Image (cartoon, rainbow, N blue to C red; front, side, top):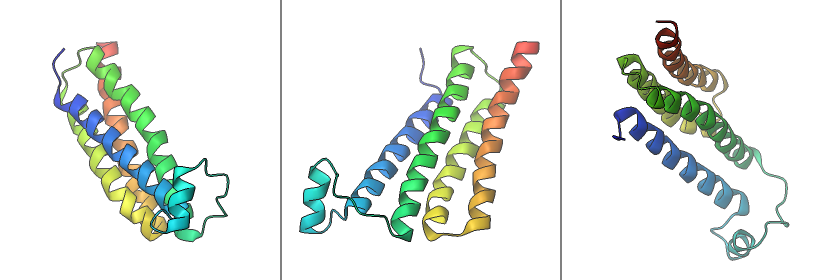
Length: 138
């Protein structure tokens, strides 16, 4: 199987998700402090309630993971089915860049822009689904 541009975007999105999960976890543990570093190395039973920024980091990471699952399912379905419609790659690119923009917007706490950028990512997934649907009904 050839690594297509769409599959590469799935891999890149996975790396972005992993990095966000790690960063959110380290921020939550306050790993830049000696006590926080010990919490990060431990089982994290001593985590207190997150402050506003830490909570946004956790939610952004969880949201990215949830959306990666949906995106990967669509992109992999299109790839396995051999769908070569350019809409698949374009949808994957739209999803990826929307998610890259989404992270700092969410962390900055900009509510309406955050929702708009999230919607752009959903539109990218809808583009992929549209190509799958078109191929299935052709």
